[in-house]
Amino acid sequence: VQDALSAYLYLLNPPADSGVAPVNPKNIVIMGDSAGGGKALYFALLFPAGVIGWSPWLDLLHSMPSVLLNAGSDYLPAEGFTQGGQGSLKRIAKLAESVEADYVIQHHPDLPDIQYYANNAVLDCTYVSPLVEKSMEGACPMLVITGDGEMLRDESIVFAKKNANASAPIQLLIYDDMPHVFQMFDFLPSAADAIQRSAEFIREVTIGGKGVEKKSSHRVSVNGELRALEDDAVVGWESRVGKLGGGQEVL
Image (tube, rainbow, N blue to C red; front, side, top):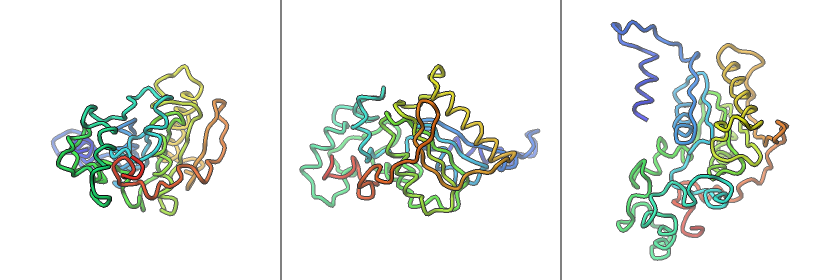
């Protein structure tokens, strides 16, 4: 996060002796995939021209159902990105049975660090897990692309749902049957389609064109056909956000 922020601010206001001209933020699009996608989306609050997240990892708390439900259709580790052993989701579930319902599990003294990326105490910080951000109100246009078969799918869906009433333009595309960061499998028609749509988004937010759609959430078929995302996608997400594993009642 600090490195990305430093790079962005350097572009906006480089040192006088750097030989680099300042870059207008309206000419900058921040893009990332997986963990980088999650960080990129948080940077939408810093007002570049736009942000793109491919299969963004938005929730280090693993609170959404697809982390486990889609383990069989993705190539990511079945236990998510946890360290395994005592830090695994199974260990968390066992521990949850022995603590009070209102206890914040990630602060339990008997639980080792769950993630490699951050210690337990900061997993619910917005710059670590952007899904817990209350609102992206005022953010720049965002394009979120994820695969329907990937473990992080629900995080993208909930991110769009949480910000349905915010002014920030968010386009969500969920590609049928696709795994995590499927764009790297460039022989797939869905990968080519997602890359093309990303390029069109960059064009729209920088040099202009027909304009960025205010809000949209679609599923995308293998033939590139769009259909509206169903309203009941990820039922009960409101009670899961911000809770390790979705809360004791679902761990």
